[in-house]
Amino acid sequence: MNSILDLKKLKTVEQVNVKGKVVMLRTDYNVPIVDGNVINDFRIRKSLPTIRYLFEHNVKRIIILSHLKNPKGYDKAFTLEPVKNKLQELLNMPVEFVDLEKLIGSHGKITLVENIRFWKEKENDPFLAEFLSEFADVYVFDAFSVAHRKHTTTWSLMEHLSTCAGFLVEQEIKALSKIFQPARPFLAIIGGAKISTKLNTIKALCNVADYVYVGGAMIFTIMSALGQKVGKSLVEPEMIETIKKEWDEIKEKVILPKDFVIARNPEAEAILSDNIPDEFIAYDIGEKSIQELKELISKANFIVWNGPMGMFENEKFEVGTRELVKSLENSSAYTIVGGGETITAIEGWSSFEKFDHVSTGGGAMLKFIENPLLPGLVHLFKN
Image (cartoon, rainbow, N blue to C red):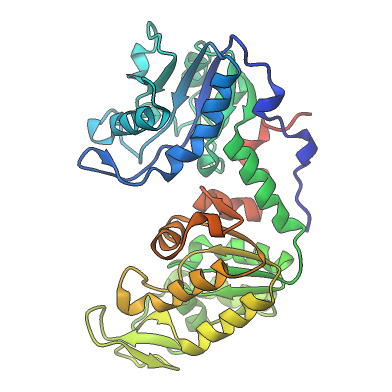
C-alpha cells in the first residue's frame, strides 16, 4: 500500500506571495483551560513558526480562526479569550480579539476571532464560508488535528480562497507519509480504550507494518471475541461479531499482551496475572508483555505509537505505558507518536525532542493512516 499523496504537488505557504496580503489562518487552539488560563500551550506553540513566517514576509494582516471544544451556539464558557492572552504572551505583541460579527471594522495586525464553532462551522456552511472569504486574500490551513473533518474551515472556505498549507500541516503530511514507505522492520503500537475507534486503523497498519502490538482496554473486546475470559474488564459487546469476522484478516500481524496487572477496582490491591478471574478488571499490561514489547522496539527501525497501554493516570497501572515511553525514547528507530493521552504520557516521563515526529492530531493521525487524502488536505494539492 502506497501513500496516494504526491508530495511534490503540496502547495505550501512558502510557495505563495503573501506580501501586502490579508492572510486568514486556521489553527487548532483547542487547548485545556482551567480558571481562565491555558494550562498546556503545546498546540499554540506549534502555530508560531507559520505566524512568524507570515510577519517576516510582510503580510498586511493575519486573521486567525480556531475552535474550542463543541459549544452549542454562542456560549462564553467556551471563549478563546484565554488563548488570546497566551498567544499575545508567546508572540510578545498585541493580539486583537473580536467576535465574528465584529470582524467588520476590526483592524489589528493580528486578530484572533472568537470560537468559530459558535457559528455553523461544523455544518460546512457555505454562507459562513462566503462571509469569511470576504476578509482575506489567502487562506493558510495549519490545523492538522481537524483535517479529517469536512467543516466550513476544512472544506468550503478553501473553495473561495487561494489555499496553502502552513508549516505544521506540511510537517504532519511529510512525516506521516513515511508510514507508507517505512524502514523495516516496522512496528506499530496501538493502545486506548475502544476498538470501535481504532479497528480500521489497525487493519490499515496490518497492510504496511511488520508487527502491530495492541494494548489498552481495547484488547478485551478482541479477547472476548476469541473466547477468552476477561473478567469485568471493559468490553464493547457490539464489536464482538465484527472482530470475529475480521480476525483472520489481521491475526498474522497483531500481537496481544501475554499478562496483565489486575485488581477488583482501581483502588484495590493490584496483582500481576496471566489470566483475568471473573471478579477482576485488567488495568495494565504485565511484565511478560512489557518485555516482549521492549524486544520488538529494540529490533524495529520504524515505529508508530498511538494510545496508552493501560490506566496510566493511576500510578499502580502506569508501568506499561511508562516503560513504553522510556523504550521509545532510547530507540534508534524513526518514531512517530500521536494522540492526546500519548502526548500526556510523553510529557510526564520524557520530552518531545526524543521523538522524530509528535503529531498534533489524534483522530486525524489515525484517519490519515486509513486514507491520507483527508477532507482538509484535498485543496492543498495542486492539480
